[in-house]
Structures are given as C-alpha cells and as structure tokens.
Image (cartoon, rainbow, N blue to C red; front, side):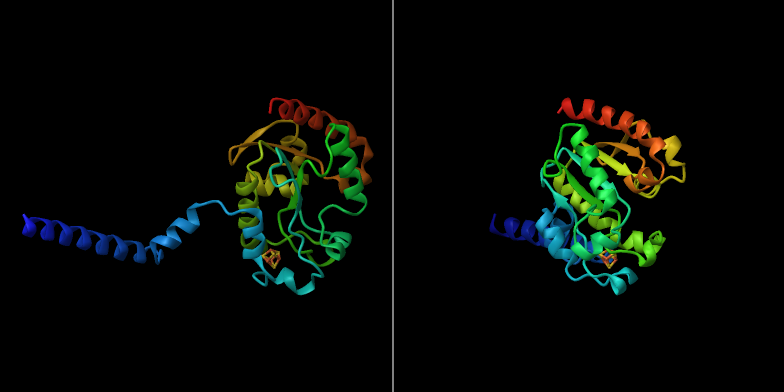
Length: 222
Ligand code: SF4
C-alpha cells in the first residue's frame, strides 16, 4: 500500500516536472508568473508597472507621462490618440481647448468628467504632435488594454481616426466607421470625430451629437 502511494507520488512529480519543462519552453518561468499574466491588474498596479517608462522613443521629449484619469469603475471610457502640448505639461489627458470641448460633449449627455474615464492610445507626447509610429503603438497599447481590463467599461468611445483605426485594427475612414457600435473586449465601441477636428470643422458637430445620443441610450441600459 505504502509502495503504491510512493509510486503514485513519483508519477505526479514526474508529470509536474515535464509540465514545467514544457512551460519553460514557452517562456513561462513559474506557475506564479503564469497566474500573474492571466489576472487583470488594477489601475494602480498598471500605473506602477509602467513606471518612468523608457520602452519607446516617445519618452525622450516628454515632460510628463499621461496615464489617464477618471472613475476607475466607469461605464464609459473615452480613448484619444496621444497627449498634446497642454496634456504633456500637466500630465493629464484632454486639458487643452480640445479637452474643454470634450468636457462639454460629456456634459451634453448628462455626465461629468469624474464619472467617465479618459485615456489615450499612447501615453507620451509625440514630437510636434506627429502621429505615433507603429512600433510606439505596439509598445504602449498593452497598457491601455490593461486599463480597460481593470475598468471593464460597457462603452468605449474612440475619439478620432487614429484611436478608432488602432482599436478596431482597420484602415477604414472615420467618416465610415462612426455612427455604429462595434464589439471590443466585451464592450460596445463607438468611433466618433476627435474634438480637435471639431474645433477646426464645426460642421461635423451634428454627427458627433448623433453618436453621443446613441452612447447615451446605450449608457442608460446600464
Ligand atoms: S509612449 Fe508608452 S511605451 Fe512609449 S515611453 Fe511613453 S509610456 Fe512608455
């Protein structure tokens, strides 16, 4: 009986060793690290994982890393492209003129900035506000994904061509993407025009208002 138990234990240990060797081959070093990668991080843990990030060249010209702000349990998350000059200086998203317009848009659907969450595709300002490069997005986007996993919003509003195309992995124009919801990480994603674009092209405010009304209806469903 004792021998049988010993033999069974030996087999379990051998199987466990083989499993660990297999995981090591995949680049998974310990059972603990496997558990860490599958559990969603909190916003605080994500911020602390980013640290004083130098993972891509955008860190070179930044004054402040712009992580994002708002309600950690927001039902609605706005995602823009990248911090601009004011955001870089203050370390907060959407605080310039475009930010003031975004605040008015949020209030127009009977919400406040404190009730929603606001973030960007990349967290450091690109030089001269150029578009972020593909390798910069590849490096930074996982952090936004972690934020969305932590918040678990029911609605995401992608602001502008760049955010919409990046999140939906498409090259379709924003004028064709906007006005409808898309499934994204368990949420409903609505692309719409960027507030900075609206400042230059106020004739598109009507379209944004139509998109916001759809968001408001979806929001009311809870
Ligand atoms: S843009 Fe993102 S990946 Fe690049 S340095 Fe800033 S935080 Fe790091």
